Image (cartoon, rainbow, N blue to C red; front, side, top):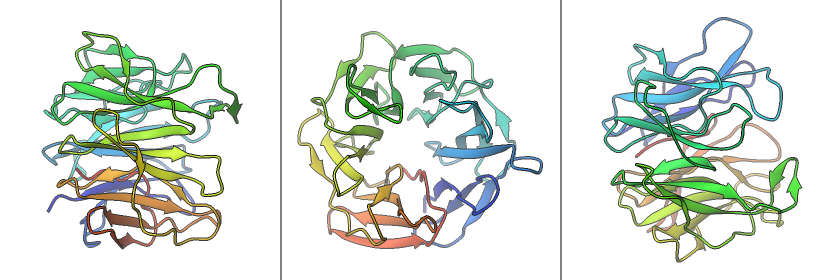
Length: 288
C-alpha cells in the first residue's frame, strides 16, 4: 500500500514531515527540524515515484516578507539520510519527475516567481518559465503551473485571478496558457496519474470560500470537484490536493475559520463518498 506523506501542523513548534497509510494507520514522523526553538519548519513534501524518498522544503520561521527563506531537502522514507539539495533561496513546492531523476520547484529568493528544474542532487539548474506551484505530467514531458493575471488588482499582495500554463520539461518551447483566464487564484495544480485531469485549489472571493476545481488535461471541461460537504464552521479553506494512485480519489486537508484541527479527508470522485483519514495535521499531502 502506497503511503501518504504530509507536513504536520502542531499547536506549538515547527512542522514535521510524516507518513500514514491511506486507511489511517501507521502514522510515523519521517523528519523533524533540528535544534530547539523552532528556527525552521518543514513543509510541502512530495513522495518520489518509487516511494523510497521524500523531497520537502525547509523554511526559516522568522523571515522578511514577502517570501520566507527556504531550501529543498531530501530524506529516505524510513527517515534516514536527510540531506540538503539546494542552497537557501532555492525551494518552494518541490515535485519529483516521474522517473525520479529531477525535481521542479519555484525559488523563494524574492526575484520573481519562476519554474526551475534541477537534477535530484541539486545540479543542472534550469529556469523554464515565470510562475508558481509546478507539477509534472505523468509522462514527464510537460510541467503545469499557475501564473497570476498581470494588471489585475491584488489582495494582500496576491492576484485575484490567473490561469494554468504548461511548459515542455526540456525547455524546448515557451510556456502556453492551458486554461482561459480564471476569476480566482489557481494554486497547487496537480496532474492525475492517468494524465486525464488536473486538480487545483481555487482561492475565491465568493461566500463559498475556497474550492477544489478540476480541468481536463487539455485545459477543457472546467468544473468543481464533487467533494463531500464542508464539515467545519465558516468558509472552507482547503490545502493542496493529492491524487490517489488510481486517479479516482483526492486527498485534501480541510481548514476552518476556527483554526485547528485540520482533518485530512479522502474524497472518492467516482462514488462521491468521503472518509476522514486523520483528525489533525493533514496539510500538504502527497500520495501518488
